[in-house]
Image (cartoon, rainbow, N blue to C red; front, top):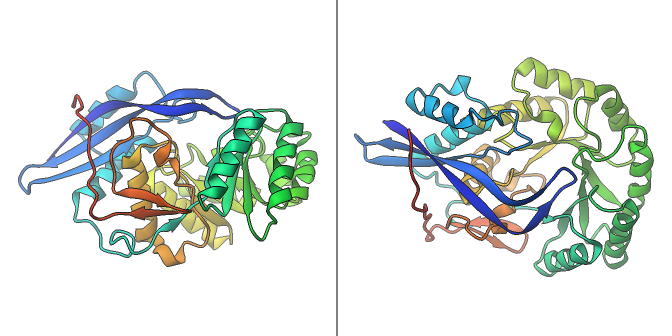
Length: 342
C-alpha cells in the first residue's frame, strides 16, 4: 500500500464573505491510498482552511509528503488526519445503511452567506423556496442594524414554529457588548448562535454561556484542541449549550468522536458541519455521521450544505433534495485529473 497527495483549487460561485475574510477560491488537498495487492483505492481530503487551521504553514505540503511515506495517524495534524481517516474508510467496502442505499437523507440547515442587505434577502428567499425549514445566517460582516432588519424580515413572514434560525457570529462581537447584542437578537426567536466572541476568552465566554438569552454554540473554540484533558476542561469550564464539529479542524473523525463523547456526558448538544470541503470531504463527513448515529438518530440538523458552493466541485453521489442531503447509489464519484505527488 502507498499514499499520494495532490493540490486542488476550488472556485466559489460568488464572493464568500465572513466577518473574518472574503474568498474567491479555496485551496485543498486530496489523498489517494492505493493497495495494489488487493486492487483497492481510497480517496480522502486534507481540507486545510488557510487562516483558521492551526496547521496552516509553508511546511504543509512537506508534512503531506512525510505522512504519505510514513502514515502515523497519531502524529498527524487535524486536516491531514481527516484526509487519511477518510481515505482509509473509503478504501473499504461501502457500508450498507439507509443513507448509502438512498432511502433516507441527513437533515441540514440552509446557509446564508454574508452580503449586502439586498443580496442576503435574495439568498434567504431562495433557500425558503427550496424547502429549507432551518436557516443559518452568518452575521457580523455588515451593519448590525441592517442585520436586525433581515431578521425582522424573516420573522415577519415566518414564525419560530415554521422556521428555525441559527446565527454564526464568527467571533465578531466584543466581549464587553456581546450580552447586550444577544439580548437584542433574542427578540427574533433565535435557536442558537455560534461563537459570539473570539476564542480563548474563557472568563468572558463562560459568563456569556451562563447569561445569554440565546443558547451558545462553540465553534472556533474547538480548533487545535485534541487531548481528552483539554476537551473535558473546555466543556466543563465554559458549559455551552452546543458544540459545532468540523472534523478537519478538530482532530479528524477520532477527534470529533472525543468531543461528542465528552459533550454527551455533560448533556451538551452537538451537530457537525463542513469546513468548505469539496464533495470528497463532504461525503466522508456524511458517511461518518450515519455510521456513528444512523439517520434516524441525528437529533439536530447538520451543517453539510457546501456541495453547491463551487464551480468546479468534484462529481459526487451526494445530492440535495429540499432540506436533506441524500446519497444516490447510482451516481458515480469523478476525480479530476491531478498531479499526484509523494
